[in-house]
Image (cartoon, rainbow, N blue to C red; front, top):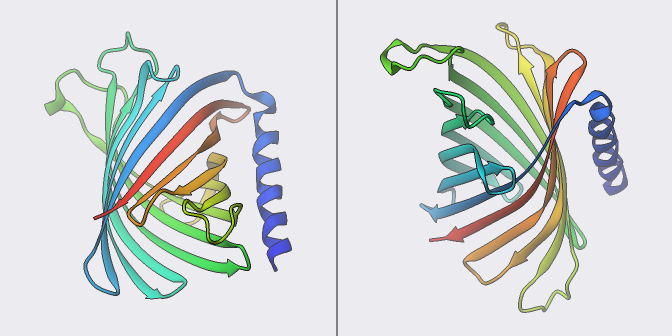
Length: 241
């Protein structure tokens, strides 16, 4: 079973790499995020996420995201989450005005975990309902309007313990691939949007603080035969309140 999951991750990653064959835009950047988790009970917990995303490494804003959510733990390995994302999307051209496109994103998510002898396989399915400002953006915000679209995302993650089990700071190797697909008005997936491929390390610094750091490649479909690729350094801190 583990072998089959690993084959799926490798297959998805190879597909994502092949999609870049016709790309004509390349970016480098850094995505940093801080998560705050607060347990309400044995079953319910709250999370607040703050994402700070840049391109040209740290020079140019890409996105700013505030994402609160609530999770219900149905069992040891099944979690249901609902949340909201307030997103500021920045045009990579800093000379453009207006440059910021707002998005309000409501979503539902299911996570299913499969423990292994020295690791974990995780499947995450997220459905997003996106309200984005229409383009071209208007200088006068009172004249702006929003469109609506839905998107489905699937992430397959594998993590493997590298350090001894008794280590003071446990270290895990982490790899995931996530596919984003647009949905038509009837709710049927119909067109590729994004692919994210990540590998890195996860450090359990103490009982409250978790750090994941690594590299990610994003492939975005711009048109029928054109793609862009962004290579990122990712740092995510999770703090349990």
